[in-house]
Amino acid sequence: MALLRRRLKLVVTVMMVNLFIFILISRQSSQDKSGRHKVTIPSTSFWAKMTPSPAFWNRQQQILDLHNNPILTANYSAADMPDWLNETVLNTDQFDCKPNLKVTTRVKDYNSLPDRFKDFLIYMHCRSHPITVDQPNICKEPPFLLLAVKSLSPHFDRRQAIRESWGRAGLIANHTVVTIFLLGNATAGDHHPDLSEMLRHESALHRDIIQWDYRDSFFNLTIKEVLFLEWIQTRCSGARFVFKGDDDVFVNTYRILDFLAGLSEPKARDLFVGDVITNAGPHREKKVKYFIPESMYTGTYPPYAGGGGYLYSGDVAARLHNVSQHVALYPIDDVYTGMCLRKLGLAPEKHKGFRTFNIEEKYRSNPCAYKSLMLVHPRTPQEMIQIWAWLRSPDLNCQ
Ligand SMILES: *[C@@H]1O[C@H](CO)[C@@H](O)[C@H](O)[C@H]1NC(C)=O
Ligand SMILES: *[C@@H]1O[C@H](CO)[C@@H](O)[C@H](O)[C@H]1NC(C)=O
Ligand SMILES: *[C@@H]1O[C@H](CO)[C@@H](O)[C@H](O)[C@H]1NC(C)=O
Ligand SMILES: *[C@@H]1O[C@H](CO)[C@@H](O)[C@H](O)[C@H]1NC(C)=O
Ligand SMILES: *[C@@H]1O[C@H](CO)[C@@H](O)[C@H](O)[C@H]1NC(C)=O
Ligand SMILES: *[C@@H]1O[C@H](CO)[C@@H](O)[C@H](O)[C@H]1NC(C)=O
Image 1 (cartoon, rainbow, N blue to C red):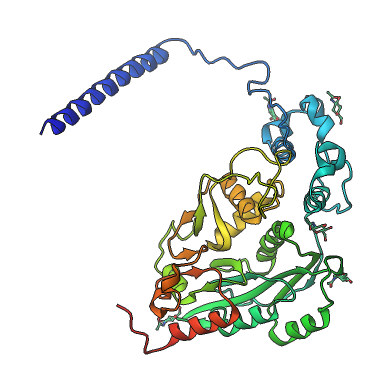
Image 2 (image 1 turned 90 degrees about the vertical axis):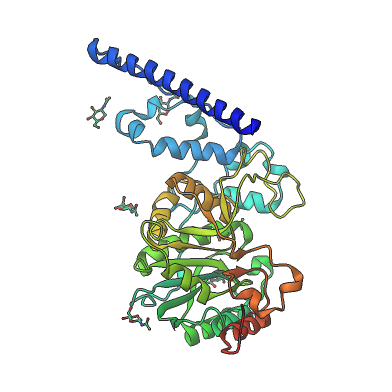
């Protein structure tokens, strides 16, 4: 009772303070209305002077932001750009794919970085790679759902298991589904065997392979992302929804279609759901796969959906495609997509059906555990086929 009274007192106090502020503000604005216009237009730049970030990615982004700032580009010449920019402007031509060796002196600890960073940095400006296998007509009839699976040339068994299970294209639950696999080039430089003939055969057989000629490495997954966004716009812009994920996940396509069919506007148009990670930042421990040195990036990460798999609308895909041209490539693809979403003013939404960190061990062989899930990571090709058989079975009876 005493607590209730105290709460009531607090609420009343807060209301009184608000009222007081309101009266103050309205007096102020009515004075402005009756008085002369007090708006003064500054004669010089009124925004804070931008100072260069010591971290390479951040600085590249500052340069891109200045280039894409309509006030600056419309009314100011190169001479008005901050001095430090003249010193740091590197290559902003995404079609020039020659190595940019200036980077080697601009990143202060370049020489002591692991090779994957060196490779990433000297090609960071380049986004255009030739498409070597395409399926130009795969979306002739725009699908309700486009399933796009990031794969690597040697993963024949994973792709086949996906075709035979959750990635079975065609009409599912009365919705059209198209499945494609996104590949780069598994090169001899990375000691991959030459599987190009087998891939050619697979592609002729299934007509679901999209391949670009660039080195398929972990840090180049962001290239896969931007090339895919471009591909959607040219080949599949009518897709209503897009799922993008890895080839070692199980996707409950039934559950996803059910979820999508139940969405209404404007939720459907702005859809971006997955296993969202918030308040994360770069790993500074050198041995971790996700390690990023301070000379490369400072700051936290925006909310992002784990790259195991996420779901978004065709409309968001178009917006991501546009905005990605204004976001510097970052070596971790799911974080990069989070950066693009932030620039669009969209926040990815967490859905507990996306289990990129797996489910509890005791439920893993229980068919009913998969019924309400959308995605589980990781699963082997055999597990994918097993789980799919469970979900399709008319005898599956879950409460
Ligand atoms: C900026 O440029 C546009 C055209 O490029 C011009 O119409 C406008 O007056 C300029 N604004 C200022 C503040 O100089
Ligand atoms: C920056 O470069 C532009 C041309 O690229 C030049 O006109 C300008 O004077 C330079 N500014 C500084 C501060 O060096
Ligand atoms: C299947 O979809 C078509 C076209 O969207 C619709 O006309 C038909 O009623 C649907 N059938 C069922 C069983 O939902
Ligand atoms: C892939 O890389 C190999 C060398 O490792 C090269 O011979 C081939 O032309 C590249 N492109 C494709 C599409 O395989
Ligand atoms: C990304 O791909 C390009 C083009 O094939 C290659 O030159 C570069 O080394 C790759 N970067 C990484 C980090 O693997
Ligand atoms: C993307 O950019 C193009 C060209 O600027 C524009 O016409 C289009 O409306 C944009 N699309 C979206 C979805 O923002």
